[in-house]
Image (cartoon, rainbow, N blue to C red; front, top):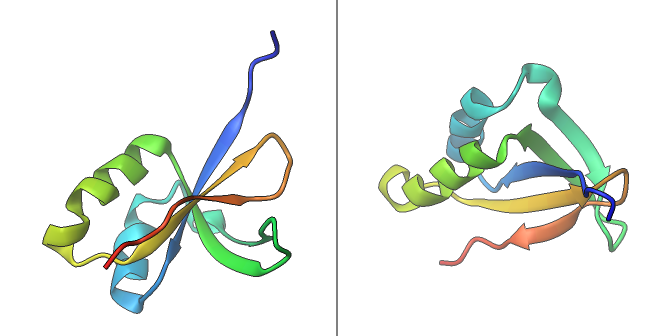
Length: 85
């Protein structure tokens, strides 16, 4: 069985969240534009999965608003987590 390679991304939904996420991103070059599976361009930060888990756990305390996206291999990004009010 072939091992699957996943790349994780966060799409900040406001400027406060963007400033927090930028500190967790792998590098400033991690800010990228990708078309999602519907063809909509998304501005996302590439992040390690453990950073995403930490941000998800802290979202209420830090007032964070974001969506999480994932890409398998070199495919299009797809939504993995949607911010709930």
